[in-house]
Length: 290
Image (cartoon, rainbow, N blue to C red; front, side, top):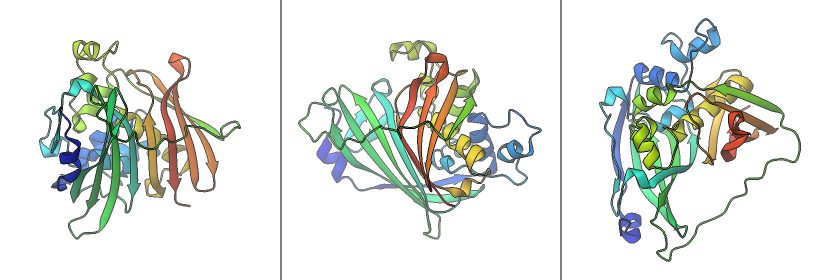
């Protein structure tokens, strides 16, 4: 079996050094659709190095883009796990931000498999990462949930279940984010070169009509929408963001994010209006700083 659960959980964390520059941040923001109105000073702050702000979701690609020279597709290869790209989907993601991410920086990133859940027809691999600057100061921690089709049924724990319920009232606001037809082709230059997001034939083999937008692109797009629309454009106010990837977005479609606010806690639901409001992100919450 490609997954040896005992070996995966017992493996020592791997540590890598991540380095990034303003160029990586600019390219990441462009991959989220920033800069469409380049004459808007608020929008220019995401795509121009003068006074450049950094979205906290940049943590998901830091050290993986053009400056790192890391532009080759890879499978799920880690101790105890070796899975073909066509069998995996990014199911969920959480990010906790401990300090603002600098536009030029370096970090040591520690990664480990925290859990492998048995979902019957699939396995859910939980990959945990922690990043600190070179002086040891924490920058961010993440938890990635990876759905591996055909890898379940090994008799393991199914893992916890979380509610996708949203408040029983109208959202406080709805934020609209357009995507462009070429957006996945730009976003992939930040490090995720999975052909699912570029190659029509590969996408069809994986069961999609055409290449899809990266789940982490949707993650970043929603974060940017909230920062722009509710947090006065200040990315340092984001404390954490957690989502489940419930559906795919085809480049060129729209993401609508409904927001319910309860103090510093936000409940989010992202949908695609072009497909009758089909869900994109569920189980979505954000904690913000006042």
